[in-house]
Every structure is written in structure tokens, then in C-alpha cells.
Amino acid sequence: AKSLGRNNYQIYAANTDASQQQHVALKARLRHAVKNDELRVFYQPQVNAVTEDIVGMEALVRWEHPELGMISPAFFIPLAEASGLIVPIGEWVLRTACAQAKAWEDTYGLGLRLGVNLSAVQLMQQNLAEVVTTALSDTGLDPNCLELEVTESISVKTVPHLVETLDALHAMGCHIAIDDFGTGAASLDYLRRLPADRIKIDQSFVRNIGVDPDDEAIVRATIDMAHRLKRGVVAEGVEIEQHLQFLRANGCDELQGYLFCRPLPVVAFDKLLAERERV
Ligand code: C2E
Ligand code: CA
Ligand code: CA
Ligand code: CA
Image (cartoon, rainbow, N blue to C red; front, side):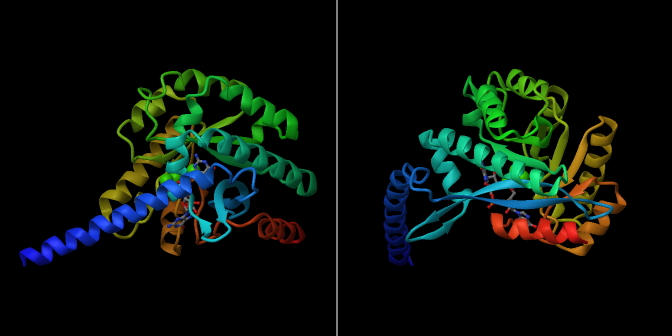
């Protein structure tokens, strides 16, 4: 048993080595991803919980690696954050998504809201408000159509000017959403301090609807609290009819998840909007 343990350890160590080498190689490769046009923005609809009409979409980046295929942001965003590449990548996503949202607005005029994720590293940049202003003025997108999603794992400790930065963006007319709500250590402090228009209930709670009564109670209480504070609520990760029924019955405003639609590439999302218009 002892030697088996050692062998296992060696296998594990070898794997780690290989994956570390792959990490280093991918990090180097990621540096060229923007200029080699390998990044894609997908869009996932957010729907009104009562009417199921599309009210907005979240921009979600993917990396189309020529050999490895589509790489998930869950994998490469942390690499990009560690190397600082998230700053140019995040700006590219913002500009690309704003331009696309403006094009859809010009074609369909639905007043859809565009959600864009911001990394802590972007929030640490002194010129973030300027970057957002420029993206909006260059693309012509109305600031009211842009919602910046800030995950709760970002702390006021790591980003000292977080409140001021978000206040500035809010004053420009942009909306602010607290992403992954309920998973950080500072949910309530966040709600109190940040100019948030909306909170996004994390998937880990939504997944447990019909499974864990405690999580159901948290979802209910979160919706109620958000409404008392005059904030909107979006539930993420809505996958099954039971999630939808529970969230609707408890007054959640908007829903996002595979039950309605996966994140789609531009052409497919466009088709969705075109079909929607004809109805
Ligand atoms: P997130 O912001 O919480 O985005 C929601 C994630 O949940 C997306 O994963 C989406 O595809 C997935 N999702 C949507 N509906 C469902 C569902 O019904 N069930 C399940 N299981 N998952 C669902 P994705 O696209 O892989 O993105 C993962 C994370 O990567 C995002 O989590 C966000 O933190 C980060 N990310 C994505 N794009 C960007 C970006 O442009 N900038 C930054 N900074 N982060 C990004
Ligand atoms: Ca998000
Ligand atoms: Ca989220
Ligand atoms: Ca997340």
C-alpha cells in the first residue's frame, strides 16, 4: 500500500508538472489572443420572470484556440488576471459587446440591457471610468443600457477605490450589478456601500431549489431584502421548470439560465432577436 501511495504521488506530480507547463504555454499564447482575433464574445439572454421576454444579455468571453478549440473563461480569466492581460482583454470585451449591443439596438430597438463582467484588476485601474466612457462614446451605446457586473469576491481591501469607482460609473448612467451574490463574505456590507441597481443570486443557491430548504429560504430572503432596498434581482443558473416556478412565485424579477438559453455566438443571438421581433 505504501509503494502504491508513492507511485500515485509520482503520477500526480508528473501531471502537475505537465499542467504547469501547459499553463505557462497558454499564458504566453494568451498574450497574442486579442491581436490574433481568437477571442469571442457570447451572449446569454436574461428574461423577465413573468413574461419571459428578453430584457437583456450578459456578455461572456471565450477563447477560440486554433488547436485546443473553445477554452472556457473559468480557465483563462484567472490566467489573464495573474498576468495583467485581463486589462486589455476586458477592454476588448467591453468595446466589442457595446458595439454589438448598439447594432442590435439600431436593428431591433428593444432597449436591451448589456451586462459586462469587470475583474478586480480592471477595477484597480485608475482610468476605468474613462475606458468605459470612451467605449460608450465610440460605439454610441446609451450608458443606461450598460450594466457592469462586479463579483462579490472583490473586496474593498484589494480594491481601495472600489466605492468611488462604482459611484463614478453609476453617475455616468451605467447600472451596477453585484454578481455571485451570497457567496462572498461581505454581501450585506456590499449592498450597503455599493451603488448597486441589481443583485444576481448565485447559481449555487438556485441549484438547490427543491433540494435544500435552507437555500430556498436564503433565496426568498435575498429577493425580499433586495426589493426592500429597491434593487432588482436576477437569478443565475435557472436550469429547470421547478427553479422557474419557485423564483417566479417568490417575486424574482429576472432569470438567466440554460432553461431559457445557453450563451450564444452573435449570429445565433441575432437570429433569436429577429424571430422574437416577428412574433
Ligand atoms: P459569471 O459571471 O457568474 O457568468 C455566469 C456563468 O454561468 C457563465 O459561465 C454561464 O455560461 C454559466 N451559466 C449560465 N446559465 C447557466 C445554467 O443554467 N447552468 C449552469 N451550470 N451554468 C450556467 P462562463 O461563460 O463559463 O463564464 C464563467 C465565468 O467567467 C463568469 O461567471 C465570469 O466570472 C467569468 N467571465 C466570463 N466572461 C468574462 C469577461 O468578459 N470578463 C471577466 N472579468 N470575467 C468573465
Ligand atoms: Ca457575471
Ligand atoms: Ca455569476
Ligand atoms: Ca461565477
